[in-house]
Image (cartoon, rainbow, N blue to C red; front, side, top):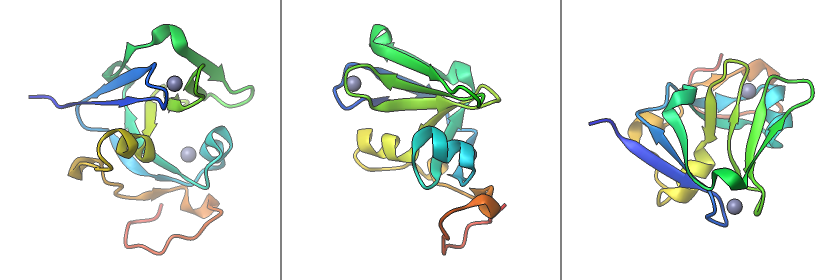
Length: 133
Ligand SMILES: [Zn+2]
Ligand SMILES: [Zn+2]
């Protein structure tokens, strides 16, 4: 009944599964996401921590705790691909880009971004119809 999806890193050493629909599916424009991931904004798919599991390659994972933010980058020690990151609430956040890359470039309906967060902190303007908070 509950849907399960997986993502894997570029070299395929690590596979991570996510159970159920993401609790948050949105674009985040905050500077924390930008600096942690070096993206203009983060295409967030967020689950509670226990919904995201490492299926394969646990020994190949590197967890980087940001020195000043309550955030971590979880990446592959071989290819450097970021599987997910964590935020101050302890959620696990997979990017929509990562999900698409591993799922035939498709994003399920319940994964589509439904809002922009921290839009007032943006560095890039987005001209779409989604609510901006
Ligand atoms: Zn890898
Ligand atoms: Zn953010």
